[in-house]
Amino acid sequence: MGERLRILIAKPGLDGHDRGAKVVARALRDAGHEVIYTGLRQTPEMIIRAAVDEDVDAVGLSILSGAHGTLLPRVAAGLAAAGASDVVVFAGGIIPEDDVVALAGQGVRKVFGPGTTLAEITGWVAAEVKPRTRAA
Image (cartoon, rainbow, N blue to C red; front, side, top):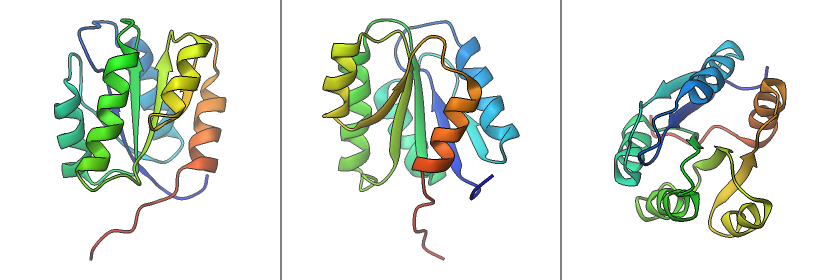
């Protein structure tokens, strides 16, 4: 494992299915990271506030509802507006490839689709997410 990271896992919107989010949260915890799971039905504003309050290095968003084109960019933009543009935003869910390209231009660094292994997710996080500089 690389460095220990603080990662927020959240379920934006009205999607009520969180098994995948919980499995990913556990895999990241098992990989040695500190993981905060916010639970179901979070607004982008709730996710942004939690990310800032918890001083996280990354935010992982799980979305299956089809509202990814609206909710995910709102989280990324809100983090930037809150002075946390260096927080890495990644997502998992059923997201068409054309939308993945659009999301990348809106601050979502990586989208993991169906069939992605936990090793792929934890490996990407270890390689791509670096601890943020924190005030002492």
